[in-house]
Amino acid sequence: SLGSRVVWAYLETAFCRNRSFEELATRTPRVPVLFWSMAEVEFEVPVDAQQKCTDFRPFKMLGIVPVPHCGRRRATNPHMRAFWAATLAFTLAFIGWFAFAPLLTVVRVDIGLCDNDAYVQTLPESERVDACVCKKACKSQIGSANIAAVSFDVFTRFIMGSVIERFGPRNADCMLLSFGALVVAASSSVTSAPGLIAARFFVSCLGSTFVVNQFWNSIMFNKSVVGTANATAGGWGNLGGGLTQVFMPLVYRFFNKGLGLSMSASWRASMFVPATLYIFLSLWIFTCSQDTTTGKFDVSILGKTKRAGPMQYVKCLMDFRVFLMIFQYSACFGCELVMNNVLATHFHDNFGVDLVAAGALALSFGAMNLFARSLGGIASDWANVRWQMQGRLWCHFISLFGQAVFLFGFGCIDNSNGGWPLALAMLVLFAIFVNMAEGTSYGIVPYMIPEELAIVSAMVGAGGTLGAVIATWSFYKYVEDTLLPFKLHAGYVMFWA
Figure 1 (cartoon, rainbow, N blue to C red):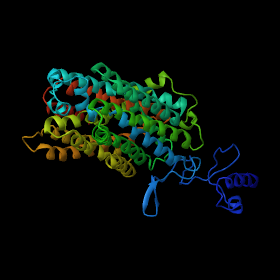
Figure 2 (figure 1 turned 90 degrees about the vertical axis):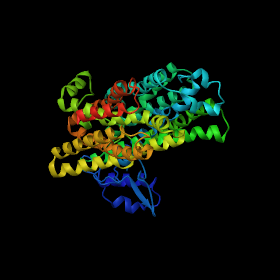
Figure 3 (figure 1 turned 60 degrees about the vertical axis):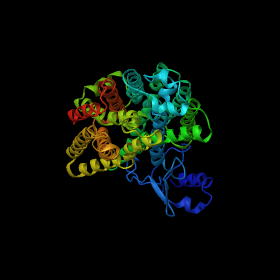
Figure 4 (figure 1 turned 30 degrees about the horizontal axis):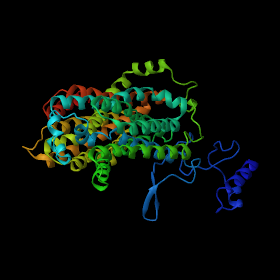
C-alpha cells in the first residue's frame, strides 16, 4: 500500500542519507520481509518466489579489485552474508582443528613421544627435531591422536541437524567457534600423549561448522545455483585445511625465530592465534548476518511443522540413498581429513624436507579446494540441466573413480622413483578429484529428502569424519610401511565409487 511505502521510505532515509525521500517513496519494493514488522525491503540480488538467490556472485568489483559481496545491510543481502559467514567459519575452523598436524614434528619431541626420546633430550634444541625416530610406539600414539582429531566431530555433526533447527545456523556457528576458541587455547597446555589425544578429540567439534555451511547455503540459494554455492562454500572452507599446513608453521617460526622463544613456548603460543581469530569471527557472524531472508530461522521454511526428533534420524538412515551417500562421502571428505593429518609428516619423514617446506607441499593438496570443489558443483549443476539426477550421479562416480586411481599412484612414489616432485604432481591430481567428489556429493544431498535437509546434511557430513576414523584406524595407525596405507585407502575409495 501507499502508506507502507511512505513508512518504509521514512525508515530507510535514516540509513541511506544519499537517496532522496521522493525516490524511496515512489519505488516499488520487490520482496516483503519482516523489518520492524511494518516495512519492506528490496534484496540486492535477484531472488525467486521463495526469496532464494538465483545468481551466485560472491564478489563484486571495486574498480578493478574484487571484494566480497556482502551488501549494505544484512536485511538487504542476507544470501551473500550467509555464504561468507558460513565459508569463513568453516575455513578458519580448520586452522584450530588441524593446528597440531603440521607442528607434530616439533610437538612429538617436546612432549616426549619419540621412540628414542631419552637420547633426543640430551641434544641441543636445534638438533632434536631431525634426530627424532618415530616408529612403532610413537606412530601408534600419534595415530591415536589423529583418530581422536575426527572422532568427536562424528557425534557433533550427527546431532548438528537438530541443533540448527533449535538455534538457527547463525547461533550454531557462533557456539561452535566460541567452544573451539576455548579448547584450542587450552591445548597449549598439553604435556603428554593422553593430553594431546584429549585436546584433539574436543577440538574436532569445529568440523561441524561444515554442516552449518552446507545447510545455510541450501536454504539461501535457488536449485539452479545451489550446487555451485554449496561446492564453493565447502571448497573454500576446506581450503583452510591446506592453509593450516603453512600458516601454523609460519606462526611457529615467528615466535621461535622472530621473537626468540624456545621450541616449547613457540608452539604453545601459536595455539592462541586461531583462538583469537574465532572470537572476532563469531562476533561478526552474530552481529552482521541472519538465519534466513526474513530473520530468525523457523522449521516451516523446510515444509514441516515441528523440529526433528530421533525418529527423523532413523527414517533418514533407513533410506538406502542416504546410507550410500554417507559412505561415499566418507570416501572423499574422510580421505581429505586423513591427508590433512598425515601429509606434512609424510613429506618430512619420507622425503627429508624441513617443517615449513613440508607444510608448503601439504598445502598443495588443500589449495585445490580453491576451485576443484566448485568445479564438482558446477559440473553437477550442468549435468543436471542436461540429464537430470542421472547426470549428477555420473559426475559423482567419475570424481570418486579418479580419486581412487590417483591416490593409489601417490602411494607408489618414494625417493627411489621420483622423489617429492613426482609425489607432488600426483598429489595435485588426486586432490582435484577428491574435492570434485565432495562438490558432487552436496549437489545431490539437497534432493534426497528435502523436508529433512538439516538431518540429511548432518548425517552425510558425519559420514565424512567417520570415514577418516575408519581409514586412520584401518590403514594408517598399525601399518608400519610408509606407502601401503595410501594404496589400501585407494581400495576403500574404489569400493564405494
